[in-house]
Image 1: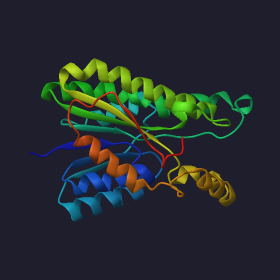
Image 2: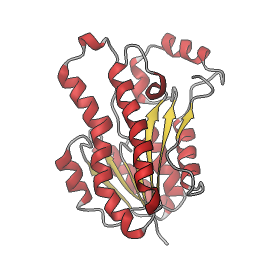
Image 3: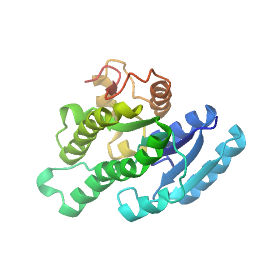
Length: 239
């Protein structure tokens, strides 16, 4: 039977890689982004043609309730929800504008409430479903100069564990991936020297790749249903 997956923030980086991995595995896809609609439209057509699946792109602000509610007006069937959309902020907390704080929390945390609230009833009808939240090692240990980002990822981890307990009786599994340093545009704010310093700190002696996150997503989707409420670290042994 055909399965349907929603992947947020799918126009680049980790979401882009997850979309390809799931398309290759036969999932029909709903993909979202906010600022790269043309890229997402083109990518959706490419995936549909290459893998023979349906792939529908949406320009959607995942931190906006009205946008997400409109998105779900178009979604009638859903087996998998991948909450990947996110933003970061690097700088001293004392210098962070309140509007940047609220925006980061909206995209990184509020979005999980919005997508969960709207996807869970669909999954309950089928008595099955998988929710995977893309988190960060900073949600486990925190990072100087990234307090807001760390706080949002810590919230994602707690959200994951709590929702997993709530939905386990309904055969809906909720897990998260705590990513280390992954080669994405989010890290372009760091200099080449900064990235080299990070690489030297990682026992695996390299930066992680989006495809590796996508592979782990697929592994979680294929894992026994008894695995739920887990925050799985993917960081090359770094933290």
